[in-house]
Structure formats: structure tokens, C-alpha cells
Length: 224
Image (tube, rainbow, N blue to C red; front, side, top):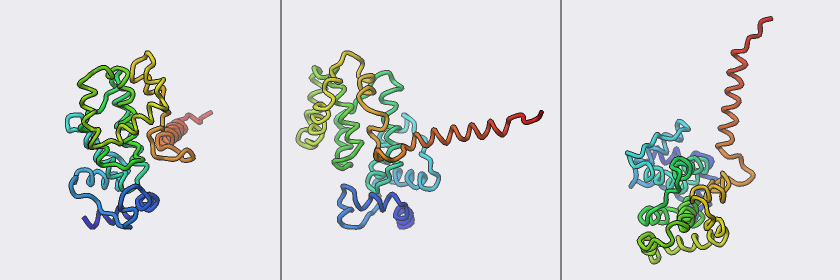
């Protein structure tokens, strides 16, 4: 593990956030990559070397794999990777299905067990559950399954109540939960980057436009 560890320590984002985050490593001044999820570590190394994310499919358990890589990115403070992974997690749940897909108690517990209290992934998971309340609030099984987390992960309910206080009116509007969810949050609401920082998605869009304009100019007919 020594080489991958040194590689991560050399990234600027690690120094910016890794020792100033919400984990115990921030106070101890040391950081070790976890060895219990070698797939996430391998995916991180691929991202560091190539700047691209591995391809995931539903068949290979993509949701859990993406979350595992997000945990690791959050631990070492790689905000750009976290934002890209957040979009991989969020977009299929909101836009591609026509319905907001919720999180079950096992996934909620896993997220809260592996992230810190300011985590954007926690915020997203709790927000999804808040917006499912409008349709599932009278579903006893749905409510009972989440009630199991009261003792193990009480902060989940704290986060839900905070979101209800802020977005309660939008939760109960008469529209589909996915449309209500999209209307409630800005594009970068669940991203880590600050308000004065450029979103990676915007930068990617600008680079794509520049690339297309460059291609068009190269192919332009300049003859009289």
C-alpha cells in the first residue's frame, strides 16, 4: 500500500482538506488508505492517473461501488472527485427513471457509518427520504424500516427534520416526488465546491464548447 498512499499524499486536495476534515486523521496528522475495500482504492488510483472514473453498471452493484469510492474521496478530501461521484449517484435517481428512487435502511446506515456529519452524501440521502415522505408517509412498512435507525443512526432523523424545516412546503406539493425534488435544489446543492468555485460540470461544458469551436474552425473553407 505504500506507493498508492504516497501518490494520494502528493495531491493538493489532500493537503487542503484531508487534515482539516471531520475525521480523526485531521487531529492525528496521519492518513492511511483503507485496505478493506481494494476496489475503491484501485478506482481512486485510476482516477488520479487518468482523471476519469471507472465505468459502473447496475449489474455489478454500481450504487454501492460508487458510494464506497465516495467514502474514500471524502476521507482524503478530494472535492472534485466527490462532486463527480455525487452526480453519478444522484442523476439516475432523479432524472432517468421518472420517479425519485429512495434509500432503504441498510444503505442509509452504511452512508451514515462511513461519512462525517457535514457530508454532502448524508445530505443527499436524507433529502431523498424527506421527499419520499409525501408518498410513503402513510406506508407503515416504509416508516418502520426507517424507525430501526433511531438507535444506531439518530443523526439521520436530525438531518431529515432540518430539511423538513427548510423545504417542508415543497415536500407536500401535489407533484411527483422527483419533480418536487429537482425544483427544491439547485444543480450544485449536493456538491462540495464552494459558491466562489467553478463546478467541474460547468468547466467540462466550457471545454466541450471550446473543443467543438476549434474543430469547426479547422474544417472551415477559407478559399475565395
